[in-house]
Image 1 (cartoon, helix red, strand yellow):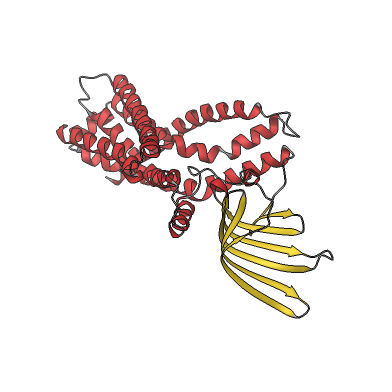
Image 2 (image 1 turned 30 degrees about the vertical axis):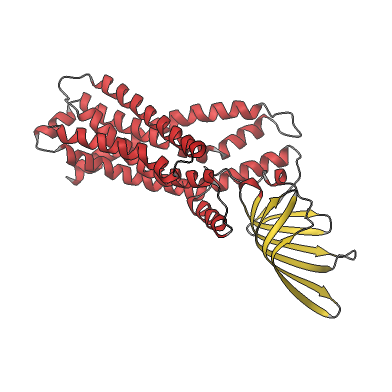
Amino acid sequence: MKILDRYIARAVILWTGVALLVLMSLRLFAHFVDESGETGTGDFGVLDALLVTLLKAPGFMMEVFPVAALLGGLLALGGMARHAELTAMRAAGVSIWRILGSVMLAGAGLVILVVMLSEFVAPAAEQKAELFRAERMNQPSILHTRHGYWLRDGNMFVNIRKVFGGGELGSIFIYELDDDWRLKTMTVAREGGYENGEWVLRRVTQSQVSPEGITTRWWREWVSPLSLKPAFLDLVSVAPDVMSAFDIWQYLDFLAANEQSRPEYEVALWNKVAIPVNTLILLVLAVAFVLGNLRNVDIGQRILAGAVTGTVFVMLNRAAAFTALVYEVPPVLAAWAPALAFLAITLFYLRRLR
C-alpha cells in the first residue's frame, strides 16, 4: 500500500504544481500590467515593475493555492481514471476511503508548503516589494533593517519595529538630538496610532539626558511631536490578507488590550487559518467528482464540473468575508461556514459511492 500511496500522492503533487504554474502565470501577468501603469514615475521602469510583480508572487500563490490543489487532484485522478488505473484499484479491493487517504497524504505536504509561504515568505516579500517600489518612485525613503524601520523627522530618528495597517504602530523608539547632535531624549512606546491628526503613543517611557544625569518619566498615553503622516507608513505596511497569522493575532491582541476592533483583521486571520483546511476540502471534492460512477460518466465532464464547483467555493468564501465586514457577521462563522458546508456535502456523497 505504501507504493500506492506514493504513486497517487506524487501524481497529485505533480499536477498541482502544473495547475499552480498556469494560474500563477495568469495572475502575475495581470498584476504586471497594473504595475506597468506606474512606469515613468520617478525612476520606476518596466524591469522594476517586473521585479515588484515577482516579489508579490508568494502572496498571490496563497490566493490560488486551494484552487490549484483542486485542479491538481482532478487532473491526477482523472488521468488515472482515463487509463483505467482507478478501476483496477477498485477491482483489487482498494476502497474509496483508501484512495482518499492517499490523496490526503499529498494534501498534507501541500498544506505544509502553503503554511510556510503564508507565515514566512509572503509577508517579507510583500514588504520588500513595497519598499523597492517606493525607492524607485523617489518617494520618502525608509531604511529597513533586521531591527525594523528607521526614518528621520527633523532632529528625531525614529525606529519602528512593527507597522500595521491604518496607521497603527508597535514597539516605537524615538531618539531626539540637540543642535550639537547629542542625545537629548529617548522615548520608547509599546504601541501607538494616528488619532485626530496626531500620533498618540501608549505605554510610554521617556528618558531625558542632561549634564545633571538622566531623568525618566512614564505616560499611559503621550502625544508625540512627530510630523509623520500615516500615508508615509503605507509604503511599508502589509495588507491584512498577506500578513502572517501570528502578526495578525498579535495586532488583534494589541487592539483588544486597548478596547479597539478592526473586523478586517479578524476576517483576514480566520481566512488565513482556513486556507490549509480549504486545500484539503477541495482535494476531497476532487476525489468525489472523479470516483463517482467511473463507468457511466465522461471523466472530462467530471473534471469540468469539479473545476466549476471549486470556483463557486472560492466565490462563496470571498462573499462570506465581504458579508462579515458589511453586516457584522462573526468572522469565524464567515470563514468556516462555506468550507464546512462543502465538506459535509462531499463526505455525504462519498459515503454513497460503492
